[in-house]
Image (cartoon, helix red, strand yellow):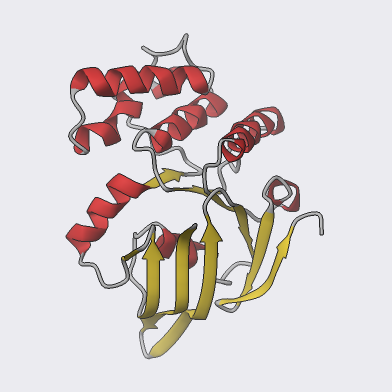
Length: 228
């Protein structure tokens, strides 16, 4: 089953008098359960593509189907709803709310999706246990290590049972031991048939994925299965 289907996607930005082509008629299909790494040099279009996949921005032209729905024609309110219902985000800087504890940070997306308090708390506790933070439920982000904060972010990304999980340099701020542990959690999610897309500049990290695309000048230069 296709989770993502992108057809001839273009994204241009007006920079003064210069028109910047960030994506150029890009085609991409991602199947259910795939683990995809996006690589490429600075300015290749990695961040722009991730923003498109996450419905954080709209293409200048082309089509984007997410879970069978054409999201390329949706307005901002509809895109916001799609983000809340279908997409899980994992950021390099964690993006946790400092005033909230572990449970509350994980619960936050469920609050916006109309879960009852008892439902959201039960699910948040299960997700915290899954990422190894069952003994840190009442801790706030400042009381956690970087690796623990990223575990909270992963649990939060899973709280809405997304159709796709997008990770932007998820180990970028971590030491090697914590980074390896986070990659292990992502590997486990892949084994559970979650659809994962990770943006990275590190070949070692990309090897955890099963498929890699290299972008260059807004186009896919290479698309291959890892290990082949």
